[in-house]
Image (cartoon, rainbow, N blue to C red):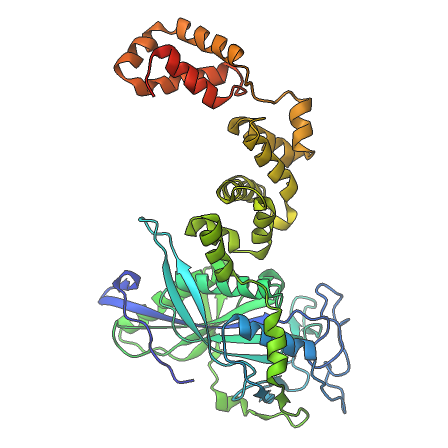
Length: 500
């Protein structure tokens, strides 16, 4: 592709070196496994975790005379992803043979797409922030292309002392290779890009995004330059399978290249691997160019062609994507950009929130989901799919607060009970006597006792009325948090002669 610099150098992203500032340039090639029951060119299963070499057809094993047959569902998924990336959909594309030899590639070539991919240019908008002023910075990252290709198998080097084995379960699995433009200028931008892309394909249901299972991984291209100069020589960091590792790999690689250049050396174009245990990259092989792969159209596959009606039918069924959902949460529910961003980060979180917020105050629901539920899940190492508190249970807690049945403090205790023990919130409140005290006579008695026992504090309040909050706290403590806070505050001010 022709490299075009669309970013203005930004000093806050510069990396200081011994001889001046440097700028890092990052582009990514993300391999996302297509969600489909069978592989790209065969009927073999794509189920994860099956015994070695159990998901292998004769096509995947490249037996003589076996011909590939395109999986239409994989084509649909690629087009849906392209639509989600606001990209050009190419109604005619061609499959090519990418020739290289490796033990886990039985054919001796990979069926991929080169000059004529199924999806052309698109874009992703990432948000960095909030900064100290609470502001977010939106940055548009260009997508160069998305093409379909088949995955290779896996070499196993730890099964035998002197031999390597090959597992072909992944051989022929459909991948979408999503190639960005070199538009990222920091490791934070690269992590935000990968996070956003992962979120989009999960919303679309075109890839599960499970990086720990290898169904989404990134080749990260890194180069450095003096601000304002042309692009430098890039090195590709292969198969990074964690967003955190992506950031670490870029940070290390940028400083490695800066060190070489400042010592008067040159950067060699090469493929490198990231070692997460050492936090460093190491050389794997010299980087191949397109001509090294000897691409040519696959003679066993006709050009892939479809019409506008095929694309439009898929476009109609697209779900609401993260950016649109975030905008709606801010516009219709009055959420802050930060809260909306957290809630739409994962489709499962957004779905949970919308179930809680249905018929209730959006801001209140957002506070409970973000601060209490997600906070508790984070502490216990669980994700939203594993939550022990259902949307109905959390919604019931919010309803009890609104009805005045429990106070906000009691609600926190109730949430912890539901989190650890389960149960119906209303029944728990009734059975454990957790209803807040609204009897003004009982509250007034507690207020009188606290005031009578603290004459010194009463004198201080006369000089500084804001100290009345101390009395409110003492009354709430004396009543076990069950007194209605608004009633307590009103009675304390009345008894102490504090005007509203």
